[in-house]
Image 1 (cartoon, one colour):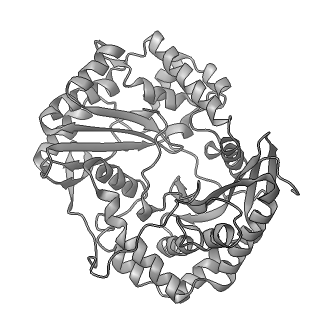
Image 2 (image 1 turned 45 degrees about the horizontal axis):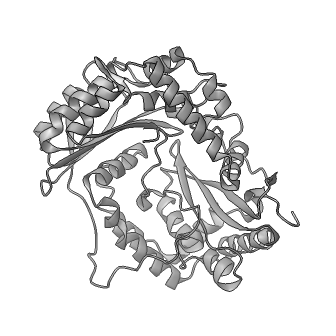
Image 3 (image 1 turned 90 degrees about the vertical axis):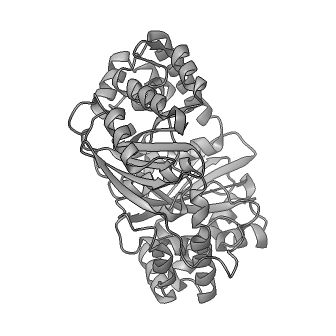
Length: 449
């Protein structure tokens, strides 16, 4: 698995919906759908580590997800991708087990063990049958405490990461995305490619990888979530054993996210019959009281499927693009509104014009009451689909913890959304949406830009 781990598509916390809308919208919940959704989340404390647990013995499977602040943000300048390489190498041999032996040990017990980085987090996790839990804990601990970093494994991971970095630049979409973030947050880790570039990866020595793990893997600063066939008492034992041997202390602090740089419009020449467009603007901090109201506004303006205004105006009315969407991309506990669309070079200018018009109309007028009702119905009715198996439960709970949500946040979500009046949505749209500051990167050969 790649060491760059995408966050789960968790609508409750604003995972970005950019990248194109689906062919059809998800159905709205039936009128007899439950009025609220919540999970029986328990807090478990052991050895100074706090974990959230959703206990469910319906299937004999246990999933754990954990993270530290840091990730790619701690990579030294010129060595971008170090943390991603370090994460990938944790499952390439540990202790007395070389890469093949370690992989065999996981496969023999059907254990899925993963480590990865995001721009602001370093994460780990496993999923295993309940009977294999002791082996999952043993191998997970071994990977974190005694990574081998064998020379052949380092070069294999480096080659794989460099190939992925090159592939990301082969398409207009990859170039547009990289160009957007570099301009939105210049000089900050958020503006760098998390997985590095072929050039930066080549400059990463084994000593830098070992230093990255030494910076990142500590007993303090851990966020842990678990789901599945495990009791609170059993989880206490898992926490004590899994993280035993990690050094005390926490990873170094990362630089806070600076204000979004509204850089205007940039065109990156790429020989292609289509252009890829990435657009966006500043969003809100995760703790902002208007966070959920903004999610409703964005669902109406640019959410997935034919329900959004952008999809209606760009595709249905004018046939300018196959799909268009935007949402909140959350990092460093702040959401950035980001979206994307791909269209023929000759249609880029009109597509952007229509997008800006809809952005401005929402900022000026806000949504209607009917749009509010549909969006709230979707956000509340679709929430249970984010928690359909133990792995998704653990990963989604981890996102909540990373964003500083309280234990009962899910239980009150439906009621909070239904209580938002349309007048407040209009105020939030006017407060947040900035059509004149919408930043755009186009990769292709657009006509008229």
